[in-house]
Amino acid sequence: MFANHYEDVSALGLGCQRLEAFAIISQMPPPAASRTLLLDRFERPLRDLRISVTDRCNFRCVYCMPKEVFGKDFQFLDRKALLTFEELERLARIFRGIGIEKIRLTGGEPLVRRNLEALIGKLAAIEGLDLTLTTNGSLLALKAARLREAGLRRVTVSLDSLDDTVFRAMNDVDFPVERVLAGIDAAAAAGLSPIKVNMVVKRGVNEDSIVPMARFFRERGHIVRFIEYMDVGHSNGWRMDEVVSAAEIVRRIDRELPLEPLQANYRGEVAQRWRYRDGSGEIGIIASVTQAFCRDCTRARLSAEGQIYTCLFATAGHDLRALLRGGAADEAIGESITAVWRQRSDRYSEIRGEHTVRLPKVEMSYIGG
Ligand code: SAM
Ligand code: SF4
Ligand code: SF4
Image (cartoon, rainbow, N blue to C red):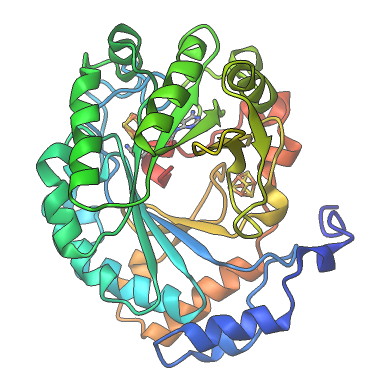
């Protein structure tokens, strides 16, 4: 029933030329799979990979890892279950060979994984790959310079409010806002650029922080991306009336700091771009609830234990670790990923409804945000 959902797939502009370009820019000898069109069932190419390097986190954000679920008895993955840095590098090269252009390291909190710089070094050495990282910023003051030295060029820091009381309540571990701000400053001083700041907006919790966040980071030249609160996982008790829509976020900012829309940097860009009319910078809005963008979704996600998922809201993944540890050759692993992608028909945000909210989805801290 979904197969015909996108009648005008040609409008995606993802013709053969683009896919051939994937093979050309790859620095690996392209496996057989990359010479054919790697499109899913809605003709979306595989372009981005998000790698969760750990399912653990030192925060308990109320919308992601609520304490009542992720308490002291929660069973996180065993260390031996995690893909090693060598395994991650190997997979990253295989993905690169079949067309991936960008990797985002995430989690859980990626900076709690010991010696993450070593992984950054390995991935930064892969030709033509755009590498970035999303972090809660708590360890950034300590690690920014080392991450930069290892080859990281840019970073996204999550921060939900400048109001210390609101922020401490949202991270739910009483973490002070000034330490995240110190992390952002350290990242800027280390030369990580651009710095993007992710703010999840939850009705009744932090919507009054929208304008102060916009104003503060505009002055510092960092791009804030306002994110609609999503029904990821099944533990955050999501309700539609707690979502502050993209339209309302824009309205609130525009009233104080006039905005105008900008063109996307590239087709499939997750954030809608807006700039301040006075030329003082831009913001992004990630409207995954009220304006779903599944049509252009080119992202796959790899869990810390090597399961690949083709949607943030997936209920099941595909095991790549078994292939890695079972002695499969790179070609075979590449073919397996290709087969998974070709079967893909995910468009969860477009079909979201009462019935989907209750599905047993994988948690965001596991699958990687
Ligand atoms: N721990 C890191 C961090 O917080 O940046 C990386 C992982 S976190 C899961 C990645 C992103 O997902 C963060 O920007 C976070 O705010 C966002 N996120 C988590 N739960 C969310 C939800 N329910 N709705 C929208 N965004 C969410
Ligand atoms: Fe941790 Fe990030 Fe989830 Fe917050 S959003 S609990 S920092 S993984
Ligand atoms: Fe992509 Fe799934 Fe999100 Fe749609 S719901 S944009 S398919 S991750």
